[in-house]
Image 1: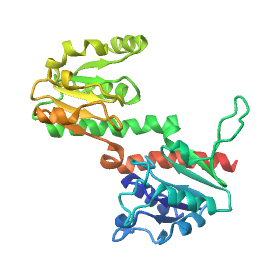
Image 2: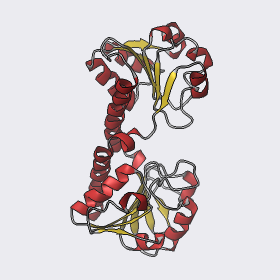
Image 3: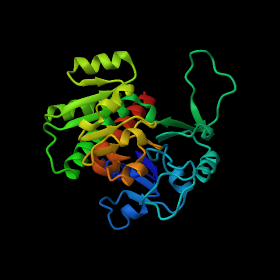
Image 4: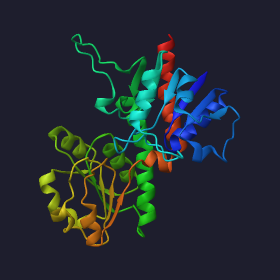
Length: 305
């Protein structure tokens, strides 16, 4: 089988190696800086043109997220920037049916059918190419939460001189990542405070023997917190909240841009604040790449059957 890869971070580079190890031929564009002096497999081919990497496989993989600025493909190992518009134009010129796997497709990037039958799932396409948004696949988002949590624990240990055991840890948000954060830190002996908006989530937090907090109650507890971890993608820890933390508090913001912490003000008042985006790709790229591969392989096998 041939696999084409355009752009991507370290986990996508590891993914390329995994496919090559299985004797697939892997065509890449935008991973030059990683593979220049680091090609372990002769069946990894570095293409000099986008059209070449598109032409050589029915399966194309790009980054997660696909773009961070809505202008360029997320490709830290590329020698030159790859604009999403240029890539789209190259994809439109393709005449064969192909599948393109990427994470976080801009809405304006694909064709929207004029009429969609009730109950029919919208198929995202560019010309003859079907787009599959990896960030919309529940299995992968759950699996990705695991390296995110482990990477967060690693940051918490490295940035402090105290143990996690008996620390007071605040987790903002009780979604996929929040649930696993609470569980793992609790098992390390921490006291867990967790915020949520839904009464049902607050009930589950209480059932787990954590301390449930409504967002309106936060200010009454912030002076007790040793580590605050935000998972909510809108402003939670503002100036008025940050003023209540003690100077030794560590804040870790995991939320996607613009984040949930006023990081400029936090640093201004001397609170150690870390914006930790893309942890799976930075801290556990091999595991994260393996998760992506599993999901993609399952989809390819389903399409074949």
